[in-house]
Image (cartoon, rainbow, N blue to C red):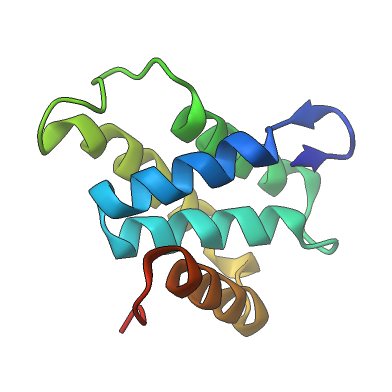
Length: 115
């Protein structure tokens, strides 16, 4: 994913992380991560908002965390916290189209409806 060709988050790494992460972190956290991903891809979203999103998603896919992911329960807490904080910051840019894309993708990745 790029933000005006200046900041790059590797899409392949993101999708690989989402498959694994979604199963371990839970459907809601995966859904919120996808909300961020699709919001960043939206052309009408300001660059400053995209920078917040790219920062959060980069932290998500970065192999070194403050709390390593392999530690049961709390290992994914830092990732979920970063994602939740970013969603809170950019929620005004998340429309129904983005919600639908995220819901469909999380269902495709994890198998069941988000609800």
